[in-house]
Image (tube, rainbow, N blue to C red; front, side):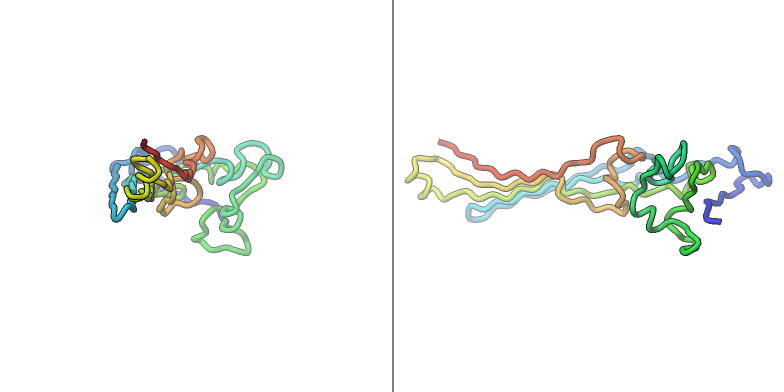
Amino acid sequence: MGDIKYKDINGDGSIDANDYVPIGRSHIPEINYGFGFSAGWKGIDISAFFQGVGNVTRIIGGSSLRGTTYGSILVNGQLFADVADHRWTLDNPDPKALYPRLSLAYNQNNDQSSSFWQRDMSYLRLKNAELGYTLPKQTTQKLNIETLRFYLQGLNLITFSKFKLWDPELSTNYGTIYPQMTTINFGLNIKF
């Protein structure tokens, strides 16, 4: 109860390596895209660049999803809150639980790569956005400055994706690469 169930693909009455078949799409995105815009009006300028990928799936893993692969979960285990809250339990026997039951010891059955662990890693990210204001020439000439522009810039501001546990651009096993950092910059451009 609460374990992942597998299909006997070749119909020989046994679930084994002969039942492995390709599933999902490649872990390398089939579609990479980007688009942006820039606009200006009365000294105010704005620009944005979006970047994304599509047609990509990955089998997610890691002990924080599936429990420890060695020893006891009581000693070695740290789980995502989402796993703890949405796993199969006697109190939550829903067959559509997001995660299988957890066990104190390693459970090889629930640690197999399968469509259960497959996730759509497509995303759209606001990679760069900038808002600026250039002072009028009449004002800058009084200061003996040719151009004076203030700006606010953001990098990796927001990501839209069905996958929410970690940055969908990262590896399938969380924590192996640092996530994209959101950066906010305030600046001033002066040209004499």
